[in-house]
Amino acid sequence: RITERLGITHPIIQGAMAGVSFPPLVAAVSNAGGLGLLGAGFMNPEELQIAIRQTRELTDKPFGVNVLPDNPNLDPMMDIIVQQKVAVVSYGIGDPKKIIQKAKPAGVLCLPTVGAVKHAIKAETDGADALIAQGTEAGGHCSYVATMVVVPKVVDHVRIPVVAAGGFCDARGLVAALALGAEGISMGTRFIVTKESPVAEAVKQYYIQRNEDETVVT
Image (cartoon, rainbow, N blue to C red):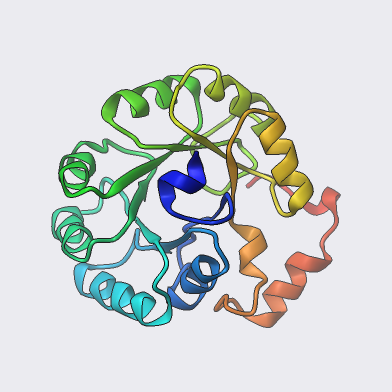
């Protein structure tokens, strides 16, 4: 359902990473059949307008914009998202009321990120079209429970499509997520090391060369 609902080919969503998820990466993911998300959490309205235009110059596929519910510029940013007919708006921690009130009437799909069953239930009640359930391994910082635990629990308590996030980086991870009941995966760090990512090459190599016991919680 997630591919049909989002208008994409592959059930893969690129995480909206601040300082990384700019137009070249977003467009590349969407062109490849996934869903690219602009990381607009710390953008102002003018920057968002420019980023959307630049993304549209690089792809004619669906893409989304990630916003922070507590951004003081949320109202004008949501106006831009609606006016530009962006396919999806994603969001995480905070009260999503203003986002949903503007997005739903305009046909912009709402894709919140949650880290607990109670938040998933509320998101569905609020009107989410699908949701990303992330474990503590993910970078959205909204869960204290492991991905393997929280994803199937969320799937069991909502009817809308669930995308899994937290520790996924390849096809095996996608198969595992599907086995847990999710309908796709969201990946962040995996996309940092792509050529379209603006991150310095030395940092990309640092990520690639690290072992499993060098991952720490900070």
